[in-house]
Length: 209
Ligand SMILES: CC(=O)SCCNC(=O)CCNC(=O)[C@H](O)C(C)(C)COP(=O)(O)OP(=O)(O)OC[C@H]1O[C@@H](n2cnc3c(N)ncnc32)[C@H](O)[C@@H]1OP(=O)(O)O
Image 1 (cartoon, helix red, strand yellow):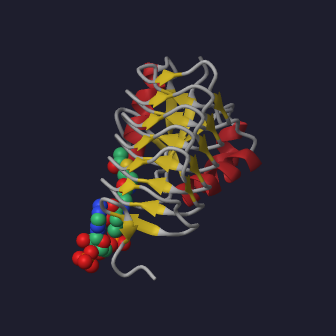
Image 2: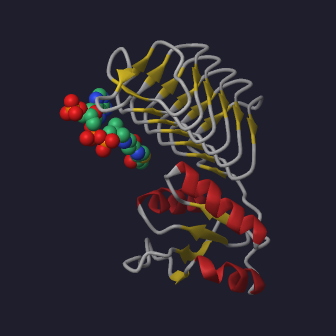
């Protein structure tokens, strides 16, 4: 198997590195622009975003974007594509993926997650550890379902929306683009684009207009 370049050397990179290894994919190394970034789990730091083209020239052809922040993950995916990298899905073998689910490029599904029948995961969507995407859900590009969160059947997450750890969304609802659902929330009504909700039932977070 050809080695994968991992973009990012923070906490999410730990999870991505171990998922890739569980898939049998070797990790060539990491790229990170932060001055305090260093090697992780035996993977060397190979450079910064500026080094994408040089490393592509050295023969690396696939990248995994190990960045939890949704907009940043999409932005770095574009940089990788522009430099000629493919963005393979990162699918932990301990996740359950329905054979009728469809997955776009760069999707990540972590250990113990479940992706149900006819679910559609858009590019760079992230289904984190132990999360459940029930039947016929749709995650638009860059959406993130946090650890242990649950989308009941037919829920739609808009582009770059975050449903954080342990939150639950009632069947058939739409969580708008760029919305944030706080950890532990129970969403019982549609969520507007860019809204920030939390609590049971979910209400606008204090300080939110
Ligand atoms: C593998 C992984 O770790 S994946 C992790 C992915 N990232 C995340 O899940 C992080 C999600 N972000 C959060 O949980 C943040 O706490 C947020 C966005 C909910 C709030 O953060 P901030 O905007 O910094 O606001 P802050 O912490 O000051 O809280 C604002 C208000 O919301 C309340 N609040 C915070 N979290 C919650 C919550 N989960 N449920 C209900 N209310 C909450 C706070 O009590 C506070 O209310 P107050 O002003 O009456 O005291």
